[in-house]
Length: 462
Ligand code: BES
Ligand code: ZN
Image (cartoon, rainbow, N blue to C red; front, side):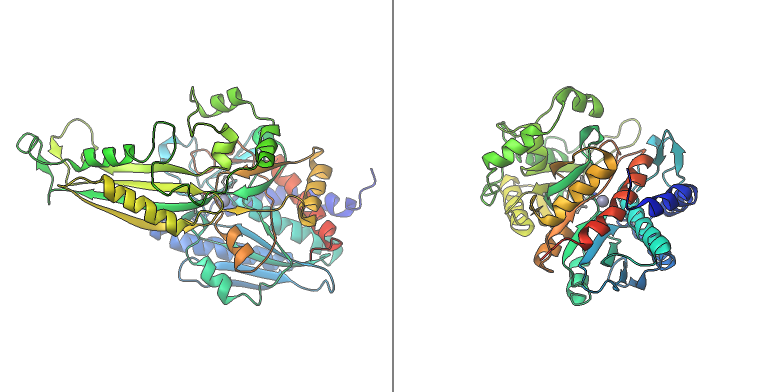
């Protein structure tokens, strides 16, 4: 087949070794955004990216300050008359703990079986590196890009993008564009190329239950006072009903019902429940009655306990009534739920479940709104065509249960249509031990983005 990209692809084929080495170097930086002691590493990852963007030939490269970790900005604006695309990804990663479950240390990347293993290998350093490499290849081989690009790589996605909305508002003018390409998603089960058309929002909270001023002897006081750990368990148990629905009054009020078309589209996806069960090592699935697994994990709202602690956790036994007990709780939200409103409802429900004899406090940690993007936008169709050309398979359209809070902000704050396009495999173990990225997806991802810029250059976006 005569490809219009033979020159760029030849260059990519010839440089894969150096590229992998650079990707691995990026993965060595432990840019865990939620841990204060990693702030300098986050800054180092930002500096690394800025450096690579500059080397690629991008302009106005800047490590731009926020009240948290910096945003890396760069652009290339010389394609007069062509569209302008804003590209988003994040250079921060989730904490790597528990370290003992990693076969090799999380920030000492290992290349094996066609994959690279490291924290952030997939989420989201793969997609970020893909973008930098695609631009570098265009500029190196053709000396110019076919359209205008603006890059926004943030460093706080994994901790709630707390300062990004402010940064977007402060930089609204320089971010003017025709489209946002958000690259923080991946492929469907079986590694089918996918375009994500829905992401859930999130409301993250902490629940603190406190009782006596200090731990008490459980013999001396047991039977006389409320136990905060027991109360915590009772409250948590009161947050779901027997049908797996979230037992918080008002929780479903703003939930847009699934249309028959939404349900038909999800039902058409090739999803094998037995494979899915085996891949996660459980014997039965669970969730809200009346919805399929794909509906429950992508298109319905949920409430999950993310962590729970309190009292004695060491070896052996210690007989106390703990002075306090805690839980991290988050809800995944769907259109048209609002994180702050949902927080109020959850807080009120928890307060109603709290008995006398303890103090219960619910605190908001962060939130992000859900998003749904149109399947039939010309930019979405162009992305599908490029995926088909490079991967040889028609992509599927999926609704993901995860959250990328900035997506809704691009739509509402900047008024941009959004395409969610990323290349991570479904078995990447993102957020878990032994996270990995398939190198064939990474390489083909670069080739997809190379073509996508060309396709968008001649697509009418407005
Ligand atoms: N890349 C993920 C989002 C994602 C997850 C997309 C699964 C597609 C499938 C992103 O980096 C992420 O994990 N986001 C957090 C956001 C939160 C901390 C605000 C999430 O979803 O937990
Ligand atoms: Zn991510």
